[in-house]
Length: 331
Image (cartoon, rainbow, N blue to C red; front, side, top):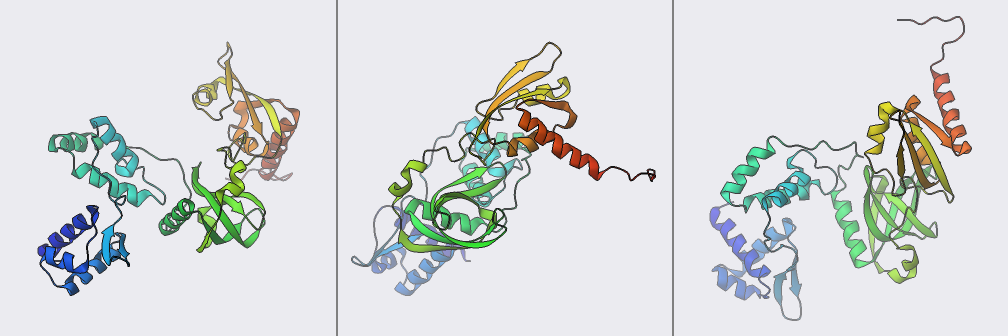
């Protein structure tokens, strides 16, 4: 693309972003080009996914003033935090990864030269290793469309692989929010098929259709209280609260105590370096697998039902590695 055209496109974007609306004739006059050239340039903006709007009544064009953010004054530490979280330190992942990376590049480009030099030096010595996450490749477009549906209150139809129902289902959903939980992105909304608020993992949505039909959020306002998962250990409440008491050995006590695993947790240190870990959670399923991850370094004190669950799974695991009678270990 010629430099002159790049300059003209930048001028076109600036004009349409200014808050004024322009007719094609006005744009052609300001840019000193033909009407046909203006239309070709507008097509370029469309291919670049820059959302311009046409007012049929007035015959004018403009760009939504929310599309480009005004400049902000960042401190050195704020700029560093933004670039690290945006992936310059190796932490970018998920549907927003590409947008975060572009945003970090724009932030870096407008910083004073001395600040850029400093950040460039420190970024070579600073990185973040993200925890394991679900595969998000190819979800960028779906994420953008769902985010727009949440804002516009648009009904969606999805084809979904349901692990709970062991089959592929089709349901109509009224999307309430998008949430990143543990390792993956989820859409939370009212499912008309299930007649209740449900959680759908974005990676299992095989097809998304945003319908030209709005829903009234007031219909489900009583469920949108910010506590979709209640007191669940992570995200699967079972409808019954349990007071759980665990004892962790000195070997892992420090690692367990320094993490905020649940909003209700309480830790008591013992003289021998062990800890008593108390938590009140809804359901035993999720926390069972967390406990098993610590092997023989944790013991369930109460409730007895949780202790039996953990013991049962541990026995089944041990049975898978038991040698048949008479068979010796082979190297």
